Length: 217
Length: 217
DNA sequence: TTGCGCATCAAACGTATGTTTTAAACATTC
DNA sequence: GAATGTTTAAAACATACGTTTGATGCGCAA
Image 1 (cartoon, chains in turn cyan, purple, yellow, green):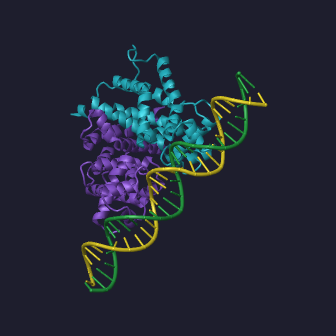
Image 2: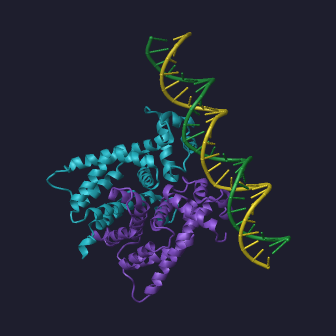
Image 3: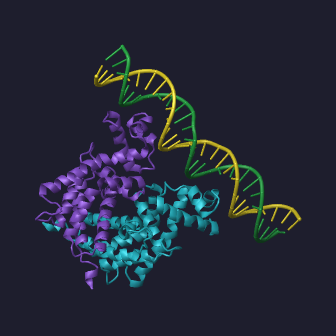
């Protein structure tokens, strides 16, 4: 599948519709008619609908994982560096990378975040498997740093706190559009993901650093 | 739609399949064959698939909102009580109510939580509308108490923090089953929602009570 | 110009969906 | 025992889906 005008148009239309409606609720006919290409083009270029879903994610996640690893390298942070990053350092680095994903249109970032939320919640087995095997390295690095900076937590409690954290991010971002509309009480609300992230980081930080349940007694 | 054996069998099968696969991914034929009833029974008793989905939620949410409001009454907490509850009081009360929903089978609570997660993420417009109009009272009460106990937050920051909080809960609960399996690294892991909630409350509490972004400077 | 490979197109394929219909059995109540 | 409301059964409905096909057009190298 080489780079072509049609391929991009399909991906553009697909990512918007998937983010709006979900994967099962978006038909190939919706996608191709929005993209103004022939119905058969999807199966011709991608092979199947599932492969298209994966391609939509790859277009985001390739640059994103590169951004994250490059950020780590610039700071000189890795498994055995002399000056380990704080938890806030890590959260800032990862969220900032999120905000800098290159996209085609204005709402690109919130679309991507909504997609990630859907990927986790919607039980698309093939997607989950694909993401895990393709981007496990980046994720493991994050886990490693969290572990370094929260040594007082038990493995189990840390595990759950990381889940809570991912939950906040995934869920919030997946509904950032309707939520912003509720807040501003107007339909044409301009979403500013950066502002939300500024609220998000202190919240997550406090949660991750809260006194351990076990150490209480 | 009166109470009947068939109705319950349909609801039982539906809630399990919906939680497993999602709404769109579950067909009426899957449900009726699992419930061992005739295909036409769903449309006879409920009218439509969407109405069935709503009925599945009602069976949980009716008792739940009653549990919550009853808990508030027992403590004497309402809009103008003399001794206002702390944030921890509120979180404990609501999470404890969650854990006490009456269900038919062992995994009832985690099934319900998974369903709530799906309801929020999967963009089933009709469901969202139904839930908002049906259970807005209970939700507004929660919002009110959070506001009372976090007076230092701006309306906007409090709004987002509540979203983060709901995100942690919804997301974690919606994937509590696979997550527990990952943690225990065994397929027959016994899920204990109560333990997870014990980890969850301090995390949420710390996040909600974190120093405000604006007060920093 | 001829031939080849790729892209596009309309059309059809087979399957699955939610819903409706008809009929016959069953239970319960007055 | 007639009447009413439930349940089953089997079939068909119309529609939508993902996918495949075969013809057509296009650009480019031989």
